[in-house]
Structure formats: C-alpha cells, structure tokens
Amino acid sequence: KKEIENFYYPYFFNRKKKLPFVTGKIAISKNNLIYSKINKKITNLHSDKFTHLLRYKNDSLMVSYKTVNKDNPKLNCRLKGFEKFSPIRVILDNKLNTKITSYIIKTANKKNTLIFYNRAEKSKVINFKKKGVRLIKSKINKNNKFDINQVLKKLYILGCRNLLVEGGDVITNFFIKNKIFNKFYLFKSPKNLLKSFEYLKFSGLKKLNQKYTKKINLNLNLRKDRITLYR
Image (cartoon, rainbow, N blue to C red; front, side, top):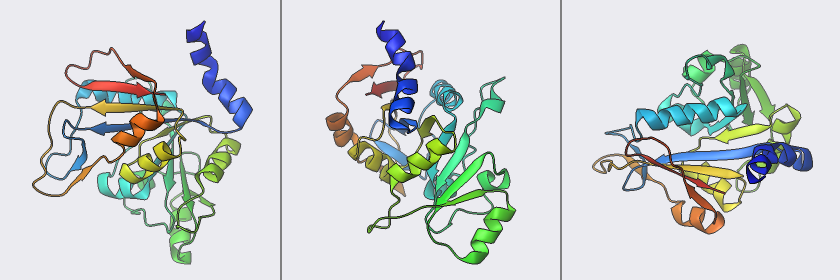
C-alpha cells in the first residue's frame, strides 16, 4: 500500500497544488565540494546512469545560467533508447546572460528550451528568440531573485508536472531553505577534490538535514558512490 501511495503521490500533488512535483539532486565529493577546476568529475559512471534515469523520469529540468556558462552541459537523457525522452530545459536568467554559444542555446527550439528572465537589452531578447528559445518574463523580488512560486505556477500551466532541479550551491540552498523540493537526492563520492585552485563547497548540508528528516540510503550498485534520498 505504501509503495502505491508513493507511486501516485506526485500525481495527487499536481492535482491538489497545481504545481510541478519538484525533485532536486546535487553531487558532492568526500570533502563536500561540488566544483573543483582541477578535477571536475565527482561521481562515477554508475551514478551518472542514475542521473540520466532521473532526467528520463522528469519532463523538465531546471538550472541557472551560471551552471550553463560554467559547465556547458547537455542536460539530456543519455540512456540508450531513451534519448527522445530528454526533459525540457528550463534556465533561470534574470538579464539573459546565458552564453549564446552554449550547447543548450545552439540546440534550442521553442519546445525544448525555456528561459525565465526579468529585464535584458532588446538586442539580447531578439538574439535569443532568433535561436528558438522561448523567453518568459517573470517578476523578481527586492533581492533581485525570481519569485520561484510564480515560476513553478507558470511551468505547471505550460504542462510541467515533474521538475528536476540540477542547480549549483545558491539555487539548491534556496530550494532547501524554503522546502520547495518534494524529494532530494544527495550523491556522494568517496574521493576528495583538490582545493589548491578554484573550488566551491556545498554549504547546504546542515540545512538539508534540518529541513528533510526522512532519509533513505539507496541500496544501488554504484561501486563506492552513495546516494541518499531525502524527503
């Protein structure tokens, strides 16, 4: 019975709240880094497959423009035979600072790429529209941050029911602090990343454990990587 409830929970959440069911994930090293310029790879190939499974199971995937500019990700599903189920890419970018040369923009069309923005130069708006990106103007608060609840409502109206957030430290912390995630996957590698050059530490670990008290250590064959599910 519990398994059936868990299976249908996202559906009932959608119907009741008129919002997408939000799943978060972040990968950290043994020394809690989410980025190191010297050795960028954190988790192994087995964990990567689980990430692509999450992308397959979610119809949309949200990142900030900083993630796009730093990592130039593809944000697609690369499980063999399931490539066509890649999620819609959603970017939060107040002033349209996403690199126009990034993979996401080069492969954009109005069906697969949305950018929420607030204000930007007219020339930028024209250029992004020419590239096929769907631009959605959205309000920001006094701290120059998007009203995430309004963003989620708009995504629901547009047909998003299951949203995966693969953010960096700032966006992930915001979602954790405000308990926006319905569930969250913490990927942890057994290796330390080097701090000798540019690096970034995940600062939300304490808050994650405070806000999400139900924890399950997933019994997956990931070799030495570990994934913890928080609810």
